[in-house]
Image (cartoon, rainbow, N blue to C red):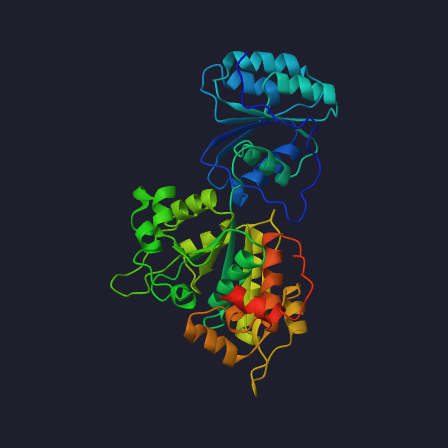
Length: 422
């Protein structure tokens, strides 16, 4: 009997909807062919093919179920993944035995069925079926099943990409992204890397007081050299848990990129880092749109004025439509409370966007300016500043981590915090 794929470890069919914080790693460049019995399942598979996590997969759908699959592969090679729907009336097991006679070695099979029976599930696994999904299925069920085929339980967890972008230039998105990454690394103790995507004018190197000789430009302009070892050489270590992929911030060349210019860099970072924070510049191009849509979570930084409200609304609408199986982007308000400046209240933002801002960060030019000029984070300038708790709150929401336990305060707490900041 041909082994379709690795056997699934769990012995329960998957049917539960995904939790809010579920992280599904993207599938690699694979071919997937689905043979459906019902229009509803075909629609779900079609919707799954439009999900960002299957963006690299080549998906083909046809009706006819098991019979059509057996007939199709009598004279054609099988793809990497076959998705089969069984309506429960046909003999599923005998059909799989026939399929095995025309199936290439290494092909993985996912069965969608309506019989909720553990004994059947065990028999399917014994025959080499990779996964059994209980109908009716939604798009996210199909996405999860296919993507999990390429995420071995013993493999290192695939990194989570967080994209931070400003709704308008000058709203402090880079400052927010760098401080949130600092909170992820320091307070949540997650290994993280900041990728500064503004190659001409990026400020991550200045903010972290780093001046590495190499950075992200070396990877983007040499895609054939990109691998784990090459990226490791380009990373600049900021703290024990935080690294930087710095932008050159020079104008000796023009930084015009194709839509998929950063794909190799992001894929490699995913395989080596649990958390990747993208500092996305405020521009609209094929590669910035691709970076935002392809991220696991998105934070939009906006100032409380009309142009920011319009741009945030536009970004929200586009990203929600392009990522129907992901949670909506998050947004925060920054530079709130500028003296004598008319502002749009957070409640008005929430009403227009139909979502509350995660935090509203007050305008405090003294401490933020000092941190920027000194190449430090806010936590290094003032260990007890109120914005630090806001950065931590953003970090927790973006990473899906629960609140960190607070240590009991003592007379030495301020001194300890200063030492930690250093």
